[in-house]
Amino acid sequence: MVINIVCAWYEVGMRHYSFSVLKNLSDLLPKEYQLKVTLVLRNEVVNYPELSQLSNLNINYLVIKNPILNILSKIFPIIFDNYILRKIKADRSDLLYILFGGLFFKNIHSFKKIVKVLYTIHDLNPHEKNKSSIKDHILSRLENKRDGNLVKESNYLLTNSKGQYDQLMHLVDPKNVFFAEMPSLINSQISDGTLKVPELSGEQDYILFFGRIDKYKGLDILINTHLSSGVQTKLVIAGSGKFWFDVPKADNIILINRYIKDEEFKDLFVKAKLSVMPYISITQTSLISIPFYFQCPVIFSDIDAFRALTEECGSLICDFNNLSDYKIKINSLVDQHLCASIVLKQNDFYDRIYNPKRFTKTMQSIFDYIYIDK
Image (cartoon, rainbow, N blue to C red):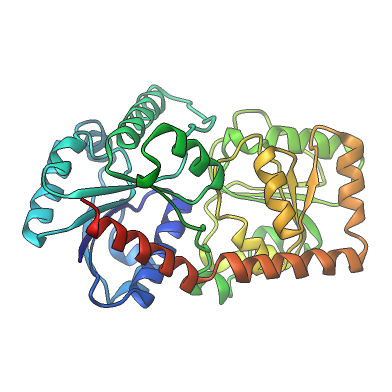
């Protein structure tokens, strides 16, 4: 079976996600499944050290460094789409597996004429986003439109969210919808990282928020609650992106508003007292695999998706709008026995859910079904 996998290696989270998927398939999928990969990059290959671990894969790189060309390639993707079409024909592919579309694939009908299409849905319901420019508004609208079209027109759909899976079962033919557990984001650069975070020199036992600065992650609520609660433990906000609100200056808030290198993750999480995820909405996230891997207790917001998750992983739930609840949950983790109990349950969850063999076995069964499906 020949499988063409296409991924736009753009957003940091999607890069880590896609790397894990490709690494698992490369290492564990039987050799009769021929994987032909196309990665779209914004910089030269040498700037992505994790790609050296995928050297046994047949990968074709498309590098679009010029920012204007990058935008134009998304608004007018016909050149990219035609390139992939030619490649699929030359490879005599049985399946086009769209791992992350990145605004390409405007006319999916052209692909369906010659190959079956499996599309990975990351956000069935678009998140709240920071759209600070006309360009951001245009690209956001295009992304939502093309994602919606791919959901409607792809032959098969794949999601790593049980909530999205349930929704999709009512939107399209259920036999063409698949679920696979989310892969871990941990790679060797992360697990063996030796770089220190200079902004945290001398700091430890802090509350950590890690991730790109996005509106749906509830950072405005977290910071306001932290400052109003009287909690003296320092709050570290680490991640790139633009804030949509003015962040108050305070002695117990440390902002590291930049790209965090993979090699810095270990230092960031090992020194943290706990990690918080105050999201106001979520569809799926593999980000939790990072604090779980580094045995860092996590406090989630009280949205439905996280409530369901904590029933399996043992982490804490908090109403981040409630000062009293926030203070109680933060202070409760002074108890070492409670921390150890939470970490033990998170470890068990990590070992069960983020198992590469389990993920690859699921994907192999999906590929087999698609291959014989008429």
